[in-house]
Amino acid sequence: MRIGILSDTHSPSTGLVPPPQVATVFAGVDLILHAGDIYTSSCLDWLEEIAPVLAVDHVGTAYFDGDERVEEKRVIRAEGFTIGLMHEFMLPGLPGEPMPGAIAAGFAADGSIVESLRSVFDDEIDIMVFGHTHYAMIEEHQGVLFVNPGSPSLPRQIRRLGQVAILELSPGHREARLVELADIEPPVTG
Image 1: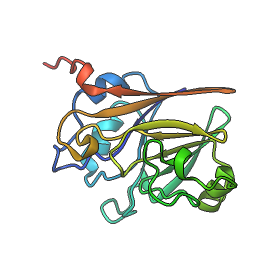
Image 2: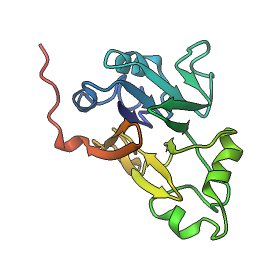
Image 3: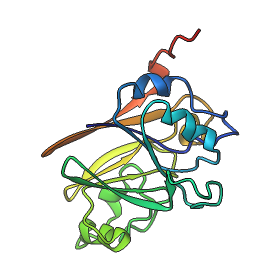
C-alpha cells in the first residue's frame, strides 16, 4: 500500500489547492493522509481527485462540520500497522514539540514511547503521522516510526515549495521518505 502524506497546506492563504507537484508525487497512491491546518474543503476535494483522503485538524469540525474526511485525531489500520494521525501532536514525556532530533535528545530516558502514544490514542501505535511544526522529519524511536511531512507550501514557515511524504506499507514492512517538491516537474495540463 502506498500512502501520500501532507500537512499544513493553509488554504486559501497559500492558494485554494496544494502546489500542482503534489499531484505528480501522489499519482497512484492508495490513500492520502492530511495532517491538518487545511481550512478549506477545496483542498480536500482536490486531493480526493487523486485518491481517498483521511484528514485531521486541531480545530476539529470548526471548518468542516459534517465532513467525514476530517476528525480531531484518527487511528488507521493498514497492512498490519496502526497509524496515529494528529495535527498538533505533543508526545507525553517530551518537554517540547517533536522537532527533528528532539525525541532522541529530550524524551525521558526511562520513558516508553509506546505507552506515551497509548495515553493519547488508547491504542498501540506503530506509525505516528503529525504536522503543525512545518519541519519535515522521519525518525524511528523505540520501534515507532514518526513522520511529519512538513508543508508543501510553507516549509519552516517560509512561503516556497516544500515537502510531502510517501509511506510504503506491506505486511511486516514500512518505509517512509520525504519528497522535495522543488525537485518535481508540475503535471502538464491542457
